[in-house]
Length: 213
Image 1 (tube, rainbow, N blue to C red):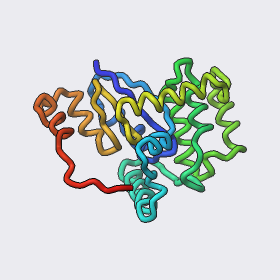
Image 2 (image 1 turned 180 degrees about the horizontal axis):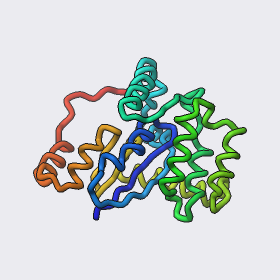
Image 3 (image 1 turned 30 degrees about the vertical axis):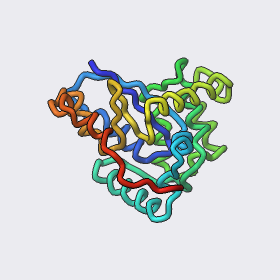
Image 4 (image 1 turned 90 degrees about the vertical axis):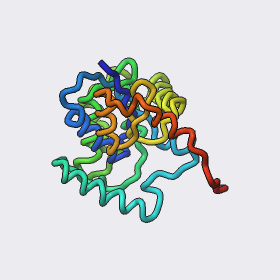
């Protein structure tokens, strides 16, 4: 049985859609999953990038596409009242719900739906306490231990060359994004393509130009 590490940030609508689609996409396959919340902004900072919602044009496209994808997948989605937002309180809550900092599917689903199915402010200080009460975390969400575990998740992701969310890691291979789910399924089914040199060869392709920032 293969094990999947699923890196996520509740700020990402693509992470929400991939999270919802994962059981359907992998139906009939024996696997296990560890969900690891991380701060997407830490990945962006490490790689010197802006998030999709910080780029004019791409921002609007992102919202339009995820709304279209959600209705095609039969998933109710309402954009939060403002986006992007500071997800730290929600991430720490998720981490605090498990001794190892890896929340179960119910916890992740509850927080994702808090963000993406209400149309309200995701980080509203009036709403988050009710969410904390509902999930009843095992530890203080603002403890040094919880904060350190969240940072450790981000550091572990960066060490594995993760650059965005959602990213699913299996046997050292990274599958990034909602649209990677069919590829992930093929890998878990031992498709012959993955035994050929394509995967490693892609990393050896030389760059023909480099732009200075």
